[in-house]
Amino acid sequence: MDKRFTMIIPIMILVAVASYWMLGKYYSEIELGSKVMLIIGGTVLSGVISFFLFKEDKEPK
Image (cartoon, rainbow, N blue to C red):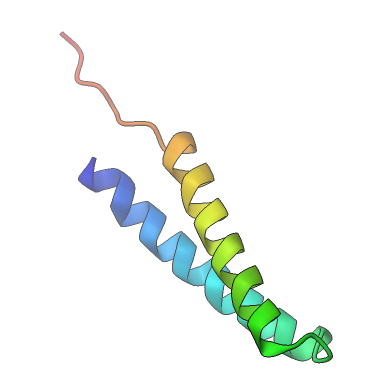
């Protein structure tokens, strides 16, 4: 479980920073509250997708 989170947390941070930058640069007319909701939604969605895509390696028996 810990191996998953070592990959998920940096991905979520990267998505949050990239979306903040893109929303600020290309979509400056969107109000701040909507930007924050979009950033949070994208970050959580990327974390959930990453959680299911990075499966735990099971030890062979």
